[in-house]
Length: 169
Image 1 (spheres, helix red, strand yellow):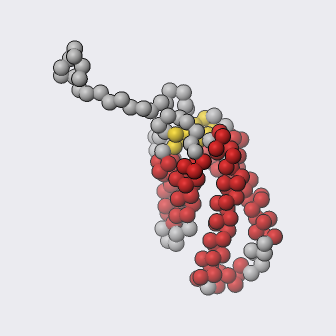
Image 2: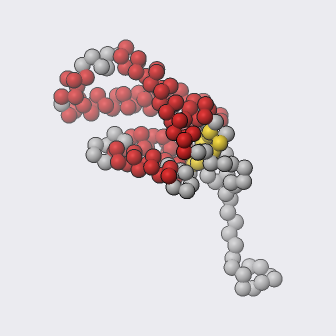
Image 3: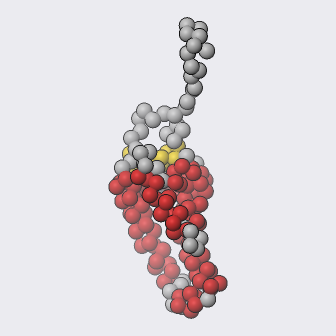
């Protein structure tokens, strides 16, 4: 309590440093995500063709258990490829290939620091990537995740889960 004013309200010591970070714009975040998707697809789709994934896709989709396997294997492959493609950049600069192109980066909300790769992958990327594949509700959760960017803080739900924000680099 302040000795000069006995009736002053107590103060809180908050460790949030927003002084030197400007939030990335919604359009730059969108273009970064599009560039990431294109870059990974340019590698991933030919791999799926080479492995024969598309040869018997109609038969796989005919039964429920085969359809689940047919969707799970490419989803896991995409996640692995995402980490291989972007892991080093995320670890060293908080950027993916797309974020580097558009000039944005992922940082901690608390102190603006670059996050450990494990936190970015397991809290920011993986949960919503997996939930998107849940039948019936997955697409709606994925949509809500992305629509949250229209709030004043310009953060998606995955940003809230991982305590991150995307800033101009």
